[in-house]
Image (tube, rainbow over all chains, first blue to last red; front, top):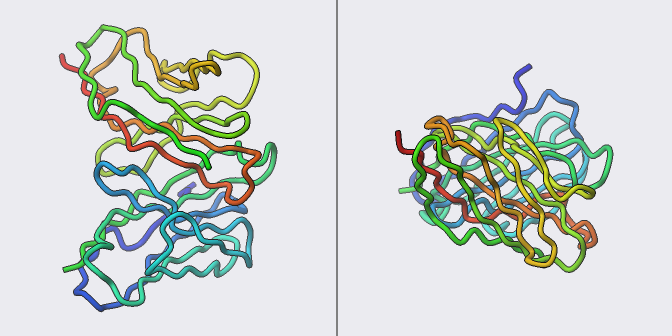
Length: 116
Length: 116
């Protein structure tokens, strides 16, 4: 059982280049999330998808787009990368059953992105 | 709006001694509270959560946390620290009355260092 799988694990971009981070989960979870982790700032929510076909902005959505391709996959796209987007990106998923908002998030191993 | 504070960037504890990692929160309603742990170059892993009921919550690896509504705190504790407990610990909160994302709001994290 792989859980949440993110690709790539590492990526170096030049300013202005575009790229897509891929995320897939095999736990049949309805909700999926993209967070970024920066030193001293914890994790901040970029976008989330409460269910297949829906996406919503989180705390720091500027410069990013997302696609919920199907129930399993949720991708994050940087259209024109900037040095401020240098970060570690985490995808997570959770089941929406039970008490709403009380569900545990399962995280991927992270994708380290450097923008020069 | 929901928020969480971890007042200590780093906590140093000798192996075998009790440990406490502090967390305070701010929500408008009754909170859902979580602790996650992150080992180097890994994603976050769930430790425990408080939803309702008994104020003392027990979780993985011998950790526990005490919910204190009057002090708006949810400190993480362990009676006897192990070197393997050394990691980055995140407190997170969700205000179920706030609407919006099921995503959590995370604190900035506390580095726990257990010295042999």
